[in-house]
Image 1: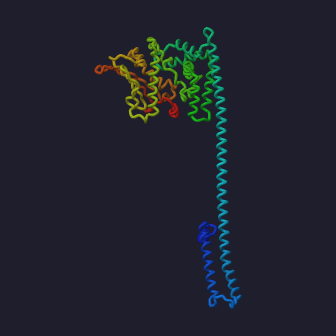
Image 2 (image 1 turned 60 degrees about the vertical axis):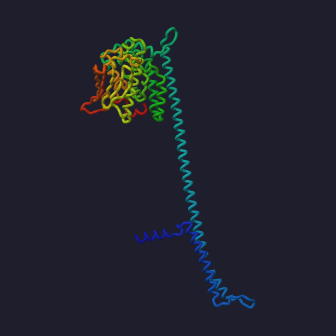
Image 3 (image 1 turned 45 degrees about the vertical axis):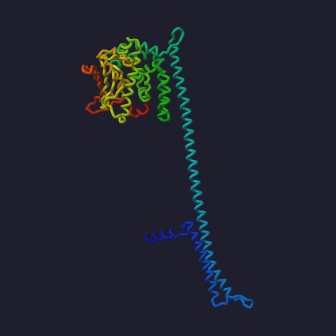
Length: 445
């Protein structure tokens, strides 16, 4: 078996069909040279001892000439036959290579055409799907608007329709009586809203269903995540403060808990002012006594604080200093956070006692007592880590959040330092990072 294998390899190696084109050319040249030399040699051999001069008396030796011709025909003819065979083999090999190359090119062209057709078909399919999605999306958006307008037309004053959600939000908010803690106030707010909803479900339920269907359509659409966020922003742009207020408290009831997924994933409540929430009414009442947009300044402060905390939650590794992060600072107040511990966030406010406040943002602080400011700091942290995500990320069967606040006066530096800590408490003592959103959604928020 071994010898047979070697013999096959040897045959394959020296096969004329396996020679390169340049090898054929060399063989042809060699063959021509051999033929020429052979003819010259034969002439000399046959003319040996024969007279080489030609005159009128010389007689041609026909027998010798015939023998010479037969010999030339046999030898040189054979050589030319071999050369002709080599030429034929070379031609056949070139044709075979050309045919093979042609087949490969045709196959490549066919494969490219198939891929192009498949890509075109995919693009056409995606375009058709996008057109169907856009058509359904804007139909649902139009339905949502018409349902909202119908609610607005149900409330009128001096013959003019009013914004239903803004009007009813004020009624619910004004009737709300805060409780002694953030958690109790949140539960009571949800209860008050639920009572209103049950009385007005015939008008509210269709609006929420259309809004939910819109977000459901976006989330299941076969488009990339960036495009989904863009469509979600279109929906969010339709919602005023009243609609956002209702959406928040509706999600805190059994009727709206399925909406929490979309609210948190697409950050639908981004533009809901914190001081418009019923949980903060106790402090909003104190601020409104000044009657100079104090609560508006506090909304700006909470927004800055939330942004600073969020950035350092999702981009933690990008920041060198997490221990003393400046949030805002003016002549009287300086606000910073400490997030060096992944399971704890400390909010710190320094009050320069002798200084006068000149900032609209911090004007509310001047109206709070020491106890009010300590308590308010806890409310803010709980809203950021608990309320805004409906207890989705930091509260569970074995995970709870604890929040503590304290303050002390430094007479030497003439400052008072307020600190509020919020941290995860887990059975068994394990450290669980504080979250504001789902990790998979962070880059899109």
